[in-house]
Amino acid sequence: MRIRNLAVAALGVAALCGASGCRKHARTAKVDPLLAAYDSEADWNDSTKMIPLGYQQAQGKRVFYQYCVWCHADSTPAGPSNRSNLTPVPALLDDGATLNAESDEYLGNIITLGGSALGKSAMMPPYGRTLSPEEIRSVIAFTRAIAQPPYQPPGRPGSQYSAR
Ligand code: HEC
Image 1 (cartoon, rainbow, N blue to C red):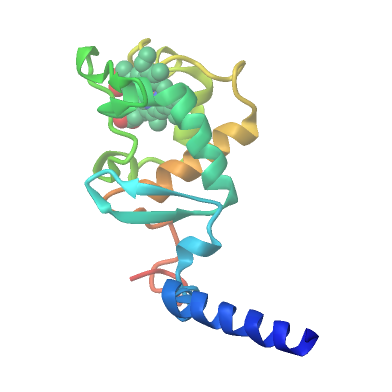
Image 2: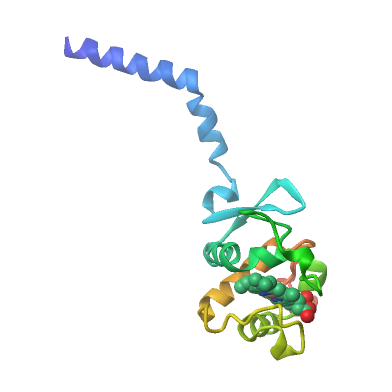
């Protein structure tokens, strides 16, 4: 009796697997970097492309969508952003053509001290008293992760570690 019940249960599992494609699931789990990521962000220029985020980058994404999205993106969780109303118009945070050339130190300074401290627009607020140094580092890491064209960290030219 017991054995027959077990056999029936096993048959049931086999049938369910067949119907829902268990094997297919196992196959997609192979090497998708998104599955090992803490979070992801759709490429702002191509929403079909997902960018996997590491731990620090994922923390930075949280900071960005809380504090920066209103001026450094075109759309926000609440609708269109304020960006186009500002002069000068702030760089999109994924604007690699502008931001890739700026050092982490410079980005850290303008985020911490605000635009006016660096002779730029005071419309860029200072976050040194709102965000911790770690949160500022994380939002820079997020900036680097979403950059288009992609960000290449400064390396020794010709080094085996340089991406080119
Ligand atoms: C109220 C609008 C506003 C908010 C919110 C804001 N920024 Fe800015 N940001 C600006 C403006 C305006 C500039 C351009 C300053 C200039 O070029 O004179 C700027 C410039 C910058 C720059 C320098 C870019 C460059 O072209 O050199 C960085 C980096 C930056 N912001 C990061 C951030 C981050 C990170 C946050 C969130 C923690 C943030 N900003 C929030 C308005 C804003």
